[in-house]
Amino acid sequence: MGEFSSFRRPLLIALPIGYGLVLRFVGEFLAVRALGILCLLAAEPLLDAAFLRYEPSRLLLTVFAYLLILAGLFWVAIPYVLRDQINWSTRTVFRWRFLHAIALFYGGVILTFAFTRY
Image (cartoon, rainbow, N blue to C red; front, side, top):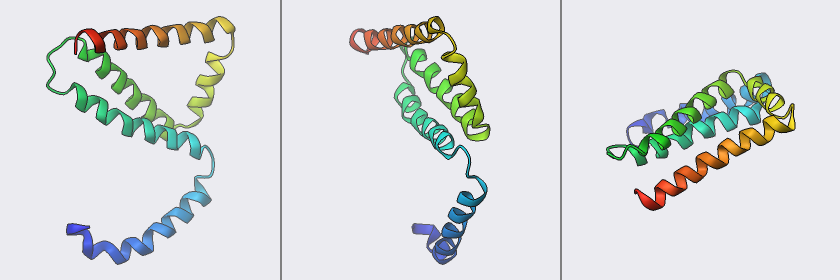
């Protein structure tokens, strides 16, 4: 633990207490909050990959990373937003297919740039 070795004993006491308090008081939407934290963590390697790159296509990856950060922040702070987003996107078949067509196109563009530009 390096510099924090003096905090070892208080952390060993505080972490199980904090875990119990989270299970007791933040019982709803824990999976959505975990997904939000995962999105926040996944954005960092994407931003590192685009750091100090001069190709304009790096902005595709950067925009995706910042969208992940934005979604992660909303899902951690207001977890019922994901439920509303899922309900909105699945309300009609056209909306569902259109959103997936956009995602497929975006993935195809990133894959094309990965093989031709990077």
